[in-house]
Structure formats: structure tokens, C-alpha cells
Length: 70
Image (cartoon, rainbow, N blue to C red):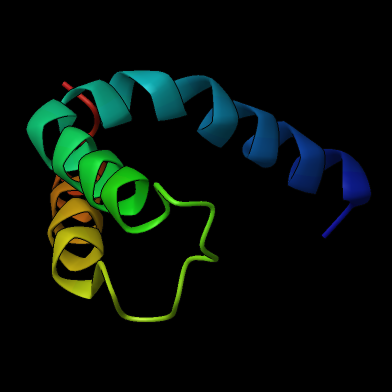
């Protein structure tokens, strides 16, 4: 496998990312609200505080990728 092919595939995935993520707007918003709420008073984000929201976002994104971004 050549380095050129790796970069070409990576660029293609990065180009598709906004389109795929747009399909998961409500999940992304829920995760963002959770992160924002848990770090309001300048606390550090702690592991697993928003695990449920992240899992929902990850699942949605994986489904969007499987559909081909359409």
C-alpha cells in the first residue's frame, strides 16, 4: 500500500465528515450540551460523565457511514 493511497482515502473521509455528522444533529447537540453543562464552572471534563450521549452520537454516526452518507 502506498502512502498516496492512504492520504487519498483519508482526505475522502474528511470531506464526507460534515455531511455524515449533519445526519446526527440531535445527537451531536445533546452531547455538546452535556459537555458544556459539566464544564460550566471551569471544571475539567471527567471520563464517562457524558458516556450515554457520546454512545448515541457514535452509534448514529456509524449508521450514517454504513448508509453511505446519503
